[in-house]
Amino acid sequence: MKASPSVWVGRVLTGLFAVFMLGASIMPKFLMPEIAAQSSASTGWGADKILLLGIIELSCLVLYLIPRTAVFGAVLMTAYLGGAVASNLRVDNPLFGFTLFGVYLGLFMWGGLWLRDPALRRLFPLRRS
Image (cartoon, rainbow, N blue to C red; front, side):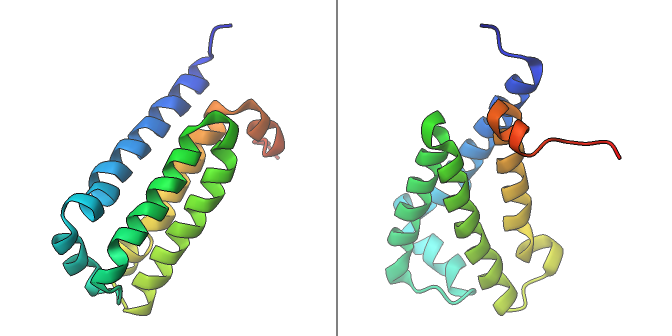
């Protein structure tokens, strides 16, 4: 069965989300813990939690990328991103540049999943009113 163009767009969005999360957030926590600890210290996260945060984030991403567990992974990743929003809000980081960045990522992630999963599109259809 041939995939529709919207499914392909969803796959591309999912791939871009995964590459961004791996490169900009997860890998620095594993490969450059000092740099990740410095950037996380401004939001109140100690260096001793960086590896654990990376493991949690990677686990959510893997679940999101597996078709059978994609919705569960998206829900878990949404919770993780919500924690990032709360952490940035707590320390009064700029609203649109830092604090809402987790919301932007979440919308990107859910958009990719919605486009590639027909069951999710049936559950949350777009309607013209």
